[in-house]
Amino acid sequence: MQIFLNLVNAMMDIEFKIYTDRSKLLSDFSSIITSLSSLIFIKIAEQYDIHVNVVRPFHTYGPGIDLNDGRVFSDFVANAVEGNNIILKSDGLAKRPFCYISDAVIGFLMVLISGKNAEAYNVGNPEAEVSIRDLAYQIRDLFPKLNLEVEFDIKDEDDKYIKSPVLRSCPSIDKISDIGWTPSIGIKEGFNRTVKSFL
Image 1 (cartoon, rainbow, N blue to C red):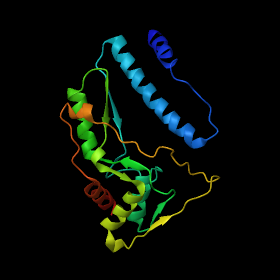
Image 2: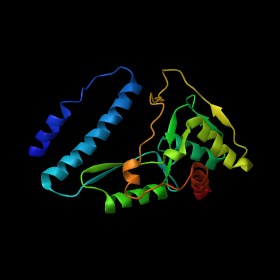
Image 3: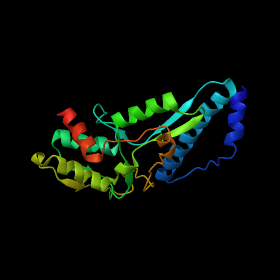
Image 4: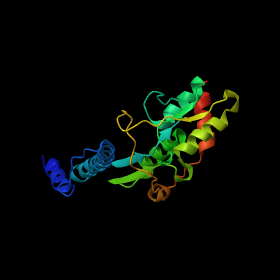
C-alpha cells in the first residue's frame, strides 16, 4: 500500500489535461506513461530494497519485426519486401534515431549486468538519427533492383493517421555510455540486413 501512496504523491506534480487535438494527447500520453513506468520501478526498488534497472529503447528495429505494427520503419520495410513503393503519410521531416536490434540487446544486457540500481538508461543510436523522408530514400536506394519509388500520401485532418507533433526525439546515451555501451550498426547496414531477412 505504501508504494501506491508514494506514487500518488510523486504524480501530484504532473498536470493532466484533456486535449481535443489527438496528436497532442498521444504525445503527452506517451511521455506520461514513460515517466510513470520508470517511477513505479524505481519506487519498488527503493521500498523493497531490490535491484531494478529501467531501459528506454528508442526506435529499435531488425530482423523479426512485425511488418504490420504500424510504425513507420516497419511500413517501409514491408513496402520493400513486398516490392511496393515506399509510402509516406506525412512530410517526413520528423527525425528519429534508429537502433538496430543487436545493438539494443547488448545495451539491455549491459544495463542488466553493470547498471546502477534504480536508474533509467536510454538505449538508442543518436548517430543513426535521420528524417523519416531520408529513411525512405535510403531504403529505396539500398535496393535499386526493386525499382521502388518514394510516394507522399498526405491525408487531410479527418484521416485516421495521427501525425506526431514531435519533430525530434533523440536520446542522450551518456549514462549508458559510462557503463561501456556504444551502438555500432548504422542505418544502411541495419536496414539492409532487416529487409534481406524477409526476402
